[in-house]
Image 1 (cartoon, one colour):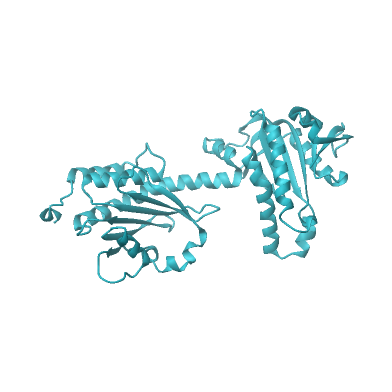
Image 2 (cartoon, rainbow, N blue to C red):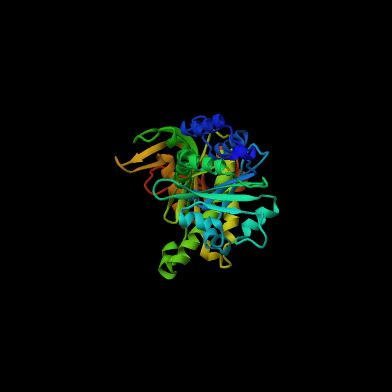
Length: 391
């Protein structure tokens, strides 16, 4: 027993920690804050904890997971993203992480020993003053496995009672972390596939077919040119790379200027800039200019990255539309149709960006455009005034 060493844990606080985890901690939705609070409670309980990490696979579009790192004296955990290719590196393959994740067993290593350690991370921890290290697989449902590590800088390392406490809290931490990881994953997936505003609406409960709202918005439609020709000539991987580069060039300025991409349609996209922002139209123009500049730099042969854009504004219906079992959170309305028709008109007028007269009037950007007169849009009886954006 640790009592003989003068290191007895506070039994009451130990039970409080387990009860705290067992209740699910409803007041704290973020896993990094739960983890930091857990580490603080362990120290108060008498655990000689000097460092702890929690490695979570979150499958974000840009990274595989996150690493939460806590150190003694910190009230918060440091959050870092982990790249998708990390598990293919030699550093990962030659680490205790590989043993714990693949083997599913606890890994333990006393760090103050003579001679080099088996893994580089052990040497790093030893040089930082830590004396003992332990890692556990943290299992969630559906076979998803994460990793939890604890380290101490006490001379004798962890005691049996401390390790027993870690073992006891593991299943409760697994439940608590899984709830939060899945909540964050749901938000990430919704943000990725429907956009941040639609994501927030859906998470608030806007899941019934027909649910939504009528809003005023500036609407932007963009379409890549000659994609059919490229599809016939290029291999699949190269074609996907071209599309991704194109959507990066066009999409990032839209989002940076407050727009929301509602959907990618083959080689095109539909985005809106809600008019509750008085500068929405000017933000759209700024996004278009940056997108045009970014896309023009992608290829030395300019003809390979030609595209058309149409912009209009008006009242749109924003919400859930679709079948009983498959919904799309999008916008519909005559204003949306006109934006699509303006984009199609760019091919005939050979201008990359066309704006409706209503949009130009609202944006007060006449000095940035060239008036092209009134044109009839396909399927729309009344001709509208059309402007081309100057570059």
